[in-house]
Length: 521
Image (tube, rainbow, N blue to C red; front, top):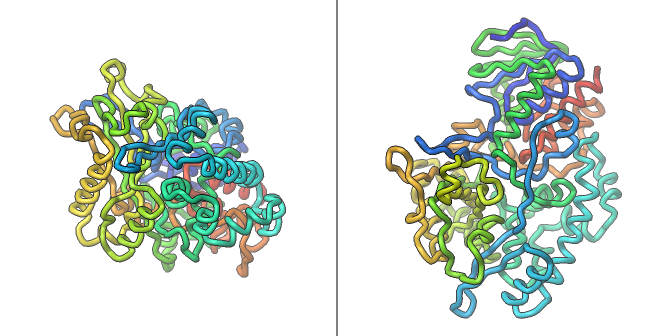
């Protein structure tokens, strides 16, 4: 039960962004209540013993960290760390009937040699260096702006200070830049994948949703690196919950919020335990859920487009490409069916209402970089985890029969992986205490049901460019609007992924919502 009848801030949802906001506000001396409908905090950033009787704590939903600013870790005194991956990616291929692949990582000389062996010259590697040199400069300039008030479009463009790059990434479909820069189909596909994580779009989509997704995937930390959370994703949210509690925030779990009423100055939040008052309400849930709680018309439907699969193996499978060690190939991002033409074919097939014939996906092995998520016995026996993220699997494909469609897509995805293995993956799967294979899959509709992600959209809605759009409502010029967390109600703020600059495991919208509250006093 909540300890009080009224608080300075009530936060709806105990995911990582809500916990960040709670910790900042409580540290500033505000009375804070966090209400979480599940029996635990963490939202999509949790570690779970997913398989009965098996001592393995998997990052069940979100699984890598890039966008979390060191500022938040330092400000809140979090006992949390990440570890770099020595290999960025491996993409298997067949050239002239011979299994081969592209390994990116292990130093410049090795990567250059891998490009030359695959493509027959230095051209693509030179283009790769130039391209990612540009995105790193972009990251160095844009990432620091994410934890400050929203810049205007013109101000952000001036910060980027590269008109050609701005035009290519903020104004033209990404496919044009990819095709102008690279000639090899596989290399083009590796670049494009960062534009499609959880985003259903083609390379030339005029909406530029693929550009926005790409931007957030290459600016994290000012480097674009995607790092492994030590102890799994739950280590971050456990640290955040501890920080919030130490600062004085109150966290109540098993307490679903059922309604919010506000007059713009004060609010009442109704939950399973009754009703509490609040000066401000911060909503760490999707805009769809906010509308439901307010009794308002819902926003346009959002849609996720991914298959998430967790596995535990007794050992890593052998590869058909004998020139690379599986321990290297799976320690980075292992791309499957993600050539440029394959990605477009899969998109067109899904857009036409069918499952992709060759489902694209990417895989990585957390336990190679961080074995602490496995029990000591499993580590000694050589067990490993695999996390698979499938692309171009929009929620609309699952509405008729979610379970059957998910099972069909999982089978097709694993079959696609098997084409690059020297042995079936099924033979490497561990089994749980009941004798079942250690594999679980989640469709977009599963994620909607379990986490409240609208249509399974991992970003809550389409990502936005990280600058202020012209506004024409009463919120313009207020602190919440300036921080990108405003709603149509002055004292109700978004602090989740649906805020401007939300999406990914970042804590940024939680930080920004807290800053907006503190700025208003």
